[in-house]
Amino acid sequence: MNIRISDNDRIESLRHRDYIITYADNTRTLELSRLLIAFRESLKTERTKKLYIGDTLAFLTHLKYGRISNPKTIGCIEDHDITEYISLCRESGESKFSTYRRIASIKAWFKYLKVKGVIVTNPATLENPKPPQMIESRIKKDHEVKDLINQTNIKPRDYFICKILYLTAVRVSEVQQLTWQDVHASTANADPYISFIGAKGSPNKVPLTDALYQELMEFRANKPDSYPVFESKKKLPDGQPRQLTVKGIQDVVKKCAKIINSDDFSPHWFRHCHATHALDNGVPLSSVSQFLRHSNMATTQVYTHPGISADSAKSLE
Image 1: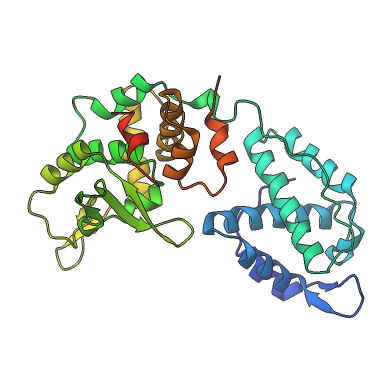
Image 2: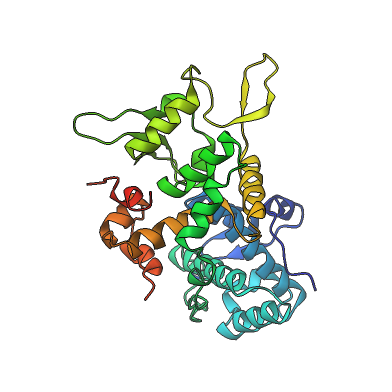
């Protein structure tokens, strides 16, 4: 059985064969598709919405074709139904990381149903420990990252993509949107910085080191503020430079990693490496957490293996 359903547009298809969900108090009903859409809108980021809805749909599909014949009996789902489903996922060869996320998705779905009064008891009680060495086992050494960035035959654009991803620890979607007006010089009271709209839709500023800022200005030459920092080879219809896509940046990193015989590196692993190396170099946990814009310091603690400043980046130069 194929249990990997990730297309959240499947919600819309439910409208043609919708199921009516009865709330626990028996006073209200709601179509399953509308309930799923409301759940999706309660999630924070677009990536979380896509992944969690895909996982939830996969689970509901399993229930439909498994022991439970109709998803409207959602209030009758028990903890062993979830446990059996997760066991099936593991037996199918799914990675520990995917299973961890799948459990988190299902727990979020049932938590939402309970908050909204659809169910009385939350059946998603299973523990969800993170896979051991989820991050540590794939962290590159400090010299490996620098070898990747400083290889002699790397193009200037690709060099700065890798260096900014590492020294600023920004996400690929954040670095992709940068234009030259987003690169700011230092002031009497602040380091140079880049500004952008973060993954959660809020404006953000991340400090640059003076050395990186100077390098960027040399790379910029005389390009106008409106030009993208990282240009695609393809031009817009009017001849203006086109922004390099997220996929383009991912391909650049993959290509650079391949040159040094590393085939398991992606843009987001620069962020993981930054956090780990900064902590290893003695930067306080609170500083690294603030630099990475983590809302909870516990998130940053996964990198602790045996005012915002540029200290985190400076420690890595």
